[in-house]
Amino acid sequence: MCKKQGSLSINSENIFPIIKKWLYSDHDIFFRELISNGCDAVTKLKKLEGMGEYTFPEGAKQKVDVILDEEAKTIRFLDTGLGMTADEVEKYINQIAFSGATAFLEQYKDKTNEDQIIGHFGLGFYSAFMVADRVTIDTLSYQEGAEPVFWECTGGTEYTMSEGTRREVGTEITLYLNSDSAEFAKEYRAREIINKYCSFMPVEIYLYTNAEWEKAQEEASVETVETEPAEETEEKEEEDKKEEKKIPQSLSDTNPLWTKHPNDCTEEEYREFYRKVFLDFKEPLFWIHLNMDYPFNLKGILYFPKINTEYDSLEGTIKLYNNRVFIADNIKEVIPEFLMLLKGVIDCPDLPLNVSRSALQNDGFVRKVSDYITKKVADKLTGMCNTDRENYEKYWDDIHPFIKFGCLKDDKFYDKMKSSILFKNLDGKYQTFADLTEGDNKNIVYVTDELQQGQYVKMYKEAGLNAVILPSNIDSPFITMLEQKNEGVKFRRIDAEVTDSFKAEGEEKTEEEQKAETEELTKIFQDALGKEKLSVKVENLKDEKLSAMITLSEEGRRMQEMMKMYGMADMASGADETLVLNANNALVKFVREQKESGHVPMICKQLYDLARISHAPLTAEEMSEFVARSNEILMLLTK
Image (cartoon, rainbow, N blue to C red; front, side, top):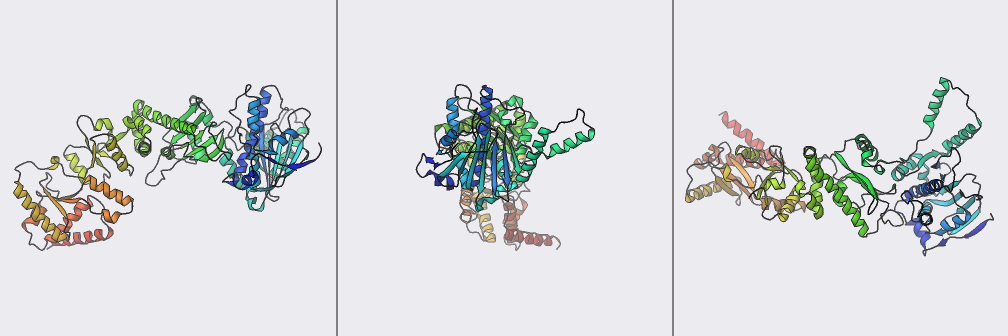
């Protein structure tokens, strides 16, 4: 062909500088675009062969090779795809924003399907100019009689086209990196990026340094002229095995697990895939395999990881793919916020991505995808609760933060899950919300810390009562939501009040006697502690060994928690706190009867701190005073 010069025909005003600098947020994305273009070209040629319009040469391997030359600062992308004629270079390269994949699908829409055609934007090739000062294309079309074409552009809108040198069908793209992008020619960096974006593309991908490539080409040319002897010796077979180990391994898993039918996948395959993709060697609890063809195409696997809530972040990773091409992690338009706690992959070729493939257009379709994923997760969980209750209960402690977060964020998810929400009681048994509110029971007592609230738990058990355990931070907003959605239901923490079940039976004091006793003890404790506003209540409790306890009204405590959340902890301290004294306890009786004793202030302080320790941790200063006072009290026993 005759040498030709010209200007790129740009379909949108001033698009080239946008492509070069701002089209993609991550400059490493050119690897994804050029490799996916190569995979498209190979896939198209395979389809043409399947339709009888092309025959691959004997022994030909369909692949994409990436060759790095760190010294020369070049990267070459070679594919064995269908290549381009001069007219096609004019159409698909020189006219920016014309999509080759779209044209191909239109031409063959009645003969094949589009599932494996990746590109549909027409701009991916030009991502190369974000990192390269010069880009060349050497290509040979599969069409009979086609001539090779060489194309070159130095980053402006000017290009040259001439006859190329390529003798094999396919395309070679060479990037001459600018000084700021030389890192991309380093093997470790290129391997990292390819693994990130291209791990599951439908065509095998190989990475070479320039020296490895030249050696591989030299060995390939020798193999074509040498003939092997009829019988190989054991030494020769062993040597062959060693040589095989030197062959680069494909960086692409061309048959990822999510593309298979769930019935064809084993538990070990699911676990191995999880370890490989997320580098997490803690076994996942269970998983959901998404496999949908209508009304849109969506496949994927969502894993429920085992979370140590004390040390682990409650944020997972859900990788979004478009026809096996990695788009991004945790795209909130597609993945409901509460599902971000999971780990998984979702592949949806139908998603309406923008030209950079890294952000989604907001439309009703995206919402439908999000709703479908939510529904499938809810169906899996409710199904497990109904048919595999034993395992569901076993997983509950790990998955309940995720489920409660989902209920808080999505009313539809709550509606589906409400009958499968479990509550573990003090006996370790699990109950549903319906179990807890059976009959006229609308008051639910709960424990947030079995150790810290051990005294109250002990009282409950001795009284034959039970409570549910709600230890997570998310439980506070969750029970508030349940109260709002279920009229009359009230949750009350175990230390909120002293119920009649703990009071001693027998002759009751008159109202006047009880008032006098309370006023007297209140004055004694207020003076001893120096707390004029201390609220004191006197009760006749069954357990005579119990001297005092702290109660905090449910409303007051929730207000405290909310104020702490907003950084107003100082304003929240002590709100609605009541010191409950047991009138049946010998120490309380001593305080009242011997109020003039010099030991009374010290005993009052000790009883108050003991009550507080059973309610919440003391500060460092308060604990030091408590220890010193305890030693002083013990010394009294020696006198």
